Image (cartoon, rainbow, N blue to C red; front, side):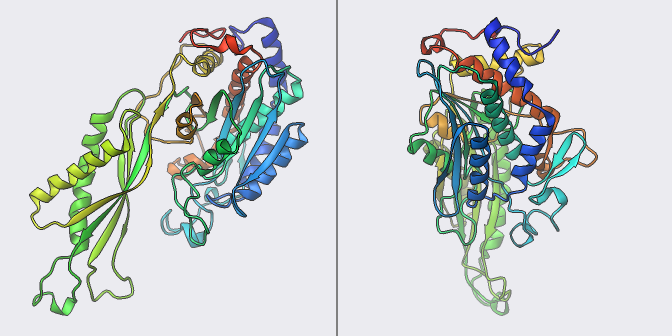
Length: 450
């Protein structure tokens, strides 16, 4: 009979089972509704961080809100071991990609805000919707539940269990009105580590029911296409080179090139993609004149083996190719952001333990999901030297409404939250109840087949 405990010794089976007993649908739903109901767009996570710290403190953990500035903060909490074993971090970001207010989201998200795009939870039997209900808040709720359950179970720990909730995890720069430009791109995770919240291993909870050991990084480019500033009444009399029209040529060329680039760089579990994300140029108030410059912003994902400079050179070469076919095209490139992709050895303890837990819960060999192009704070953790794997929930497929990109972020199944929480608990107990020597490379967790 499948019980999710296969491979564990009797003592750890008992500890995991006792912790699982505290994981209930009601508590998961309560935690989630609390998270969704507190707005936390990138740069304004502090009220949510304070709520998380207070909630975990009430469950008996040593918890803290860690301010970055007046508006932005992380939260973290610790269950202390006897210092003979390895320390493990269960991590989740807490900021939402969009804001939940018409003034900032519409019309870019669509003609209006739906129910799921607002920071308020709605329950549909097993499903809960609301801004960020799955990504990231459903995953954060699972991390909170795992820590609370292990604390209530009184599991004797050898290493410390740290749960951390990072601000600024979304791929975005500052919103209007921010005092700081760098409010996203993993700034909270970086700050957390810089301030000494550090562990031997980490598990990040982000979407995808698999154990991922590698992921893409990203580089952003600004492509400025130059033209002639002139007047519509003089188009037929003066030199005319419309920067916006030329920018359209660049976009069409890049859209074809992105597909070729992805095919060349697909390896491991990643298939790095690229998009043209925004266009800026001209005076909306003055349609009678052309702009001398039109700027495109591009997000290009990079495989762990691709350095940002290699990506820049490939991207620049693609534009040079277009210039050769369109004489007179004047376009310049600036790389404005770079976060390398990363990977963790599959011989690492945290990967092998997480896979053993996945297989025990599923009753079958681990299923690797390939073709990924999403980046997370796992790159920050791995980049600082902490072996990290990513485990999460699958996107909801069976729902009384269509699941598009936004609803996928904003809809979560409590049943799937149960499974993820059980996995996090099992991996945590399997790690922070051991001596450090047991987790050295070459040692296999109980039940591992990978």
